[in-house]
Length: 194
Length: 68
Image 1: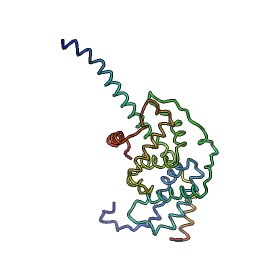
Image 2: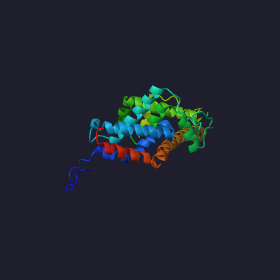
Image 3: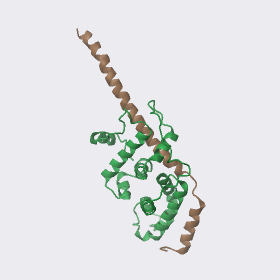
Image 4: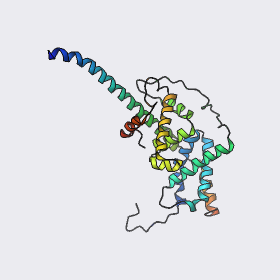
């Protein structure tokens, strides 16, 4: 990236790169909170914290991962501090799902979305990090402060829970009861790859 | 002789194999759809317009200077 001869070695202030990461940061916040207003407050807190702690950022490392880490740490520490119920004006968390299994195959996005809303934040987090936002397991593990193996098993449990919420688990054994062998098969087939 | 045993065994085998394949196919298809839906959840949030408050916040922070 910086190998062009003519361009001087850019010592760009990483603060200037922050706006580029805002959409991803906000998408992660919305995925975690499932509430845009709460997500925006979380992003605001994250920006302020990042800005005042940029001296702790190691230049040349993954800025997005660093920002994501601040955001998820802020999210969980807020949750611990307030121990309040997540405001739920739309009632999305309250609804109980009884979606019929889609044996012929098609998962409606609205059903999926409703099931995703019902997952725990920890499960939403791991699925978004490794399944949607394109981070490697190693990056996700560093962000979450856990071992890579923990990320994998949490992702599998999250998938199993998602399948259960979608009514896909009965008689299907698609994601439930995932054992070592199944996990090995799943990772071989690249199914859990980010 | 061989012709009489083979057709007997084959249909059953084929049925088992066929069912296995279909099950595996369904499983893969569902996994694919789950992954696709996960990306869609994220991408729907990703393409939303960023509220002005963040540009304003960054301006404020810049004016205060680094490390404040």
